[in-house]
Amino acid sequence: MGVPQFSLLRLLVLSFITLALTPQQALASITRHYKFDIQLQNVTRLCHTKSIVTVNGQFPGPRIVAREGDRLLIKVVNHVQNNISIHWHGIRQLQNGWPDGPAYITQCPIQTGNSYVYNFTIVGQRGTLWWHAHISWLRSTIYGPLIILPKRGVPYPFTKPYKEVPIIFGEWWNVDPEAVINQALQTGGGPNVSDAYTINGLPGPLYNCSTKDTFKLKVQAGKTYLMRLINAALNDELFFSIANHTLKVVETDAVYVKPFETNTILIAPGQTTNVILKTKPNFPNATFFMTARPYVTGLGTFDNSTLAGILEYETTTLHSTLSMNKLPLHKPILPALNNTSFATKFASKLRSLNSPQFPANVPQKVDKRLFFTIGLGTNPCSHNHQTCQGPNNATMFAASINNVSFTMPNTALLQSHFFGQSNGVYSPDFPISPLIPFNYTGAQLNNTNVGNGTKLMVLPFNTSVELVLQDTSILGAESHPLHLHGFNFFVVGQGFGNFDKNKDPKKFNLIDPVERNTVGVPSGGWVAIRFLADNPGVWFMHCHLEIHTSWGLKMAWVVLDGKFPNQKLLPPPLDLPKC
Image (tube, rainbow, N blue to C red):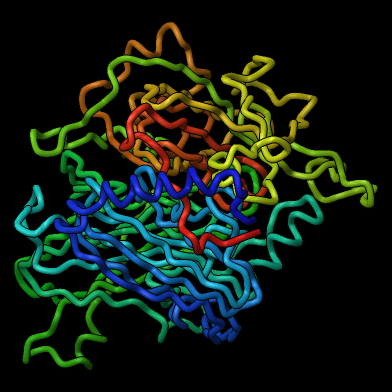
């Protein structure tokens, strides 16, 4: 999509403003350069070798490390037949949505043989985030850690660890995940599930043919380790535990929390959690499984398997490798697959640190109250299918927010907004609440059909938003991890059943609620979030269960420019990909 002539003058003026804004930032930060070559690579897991799409031939992809305040220039070159785009999950991208990454939302994808430089500065953020492909299901193999260290001289609000270890969970298919989602969308049925879960790309010894593909974390006795946990799985929330060890949670989604100890972590796709592992004071004469398996609330099929890595204490001269292999191996006990009680208790323990240095700036007044229902529904079988494989073999699975199943545009929404060319691309009339109220978590409805459209919600700059996300039981209640691009939000309340606008707000936590970019909406319940719309642009919001996104559980926000230069969306880069 080219730049229209009438917009060139605006582009030049805004480019001048951009240059005027950045010198101080440049002086205070380091520019870090990375190159991502999108290329095919043969990889073998579970005794299956297949060609997968990778970054630089690595699976998982390379680790990006930066400091708060740094500028990142990441050149992505596409050498494969698939279109590609990369999302820097959790980076706020202030005034600068162009490098955010979701295809057809903030950019057209990078086509075969083309490149794009993602150019952004990390402002006011530090902690564990991650990056991943944001088109179709390519993030099944294109993902990696994005670690933001504090500014030099700024300590962690906890004891400095001896070592830091990224732990990234994923899924492995013996077949091509692109074929899996294409088949599901064609037939209208649920997708085939993955063949294994992985930890740093390795499935571990509980899977067939995978003993050699086991992640081992070697530790020393009497030390503290910061484990940076990331859930990059496509469709599964995961429980995680290390046998005979306690984990101390200190951060979620790159925001410090009040520390608490737990034996088990629950982490949804898109979320990150930093935990401190304090090793035993002496060599324990044992090794320990680190295991993860899914937390399941929906009615569909799922990958009912368990991944395992091994926590191994480094040997002294008294313990040879041979004797290490003979040591007892302890296994953790994970919650039951459907243990919603654990999920609720774990979520309730998460509170913002809310210290003078890291305050929780919860919006106390609300300008706009919104109520969004989320869940599954159906579309009629397409015209060339008399029957299909969705519910009752007569419909196709769909998903929606306020009964609008989002239709992806053919061009990027952010460009359409910036150049004033939204006609025929999107409509600015996303409903503020369901058009027809019903008993959201009651008996299933006879009519499960959803509406379809490319509808956006428009917010004036600096609007203070309170959004209640209500799960529905239209096709069975289910937990949904909702991710908002461009913002962090505060989780001020949650509960089960239908949200009561008269009673439930009285119990909201407006002092130290957890601050996140991805939140699990409870199965058969609701969650309330607050955020300040202080970032102009077009911002995607979607379920981070990839199948639900594919079925339409997504929408976008337009945040309008403010009055001042630092409140306006900056112009696009000249190398922005064209559709």
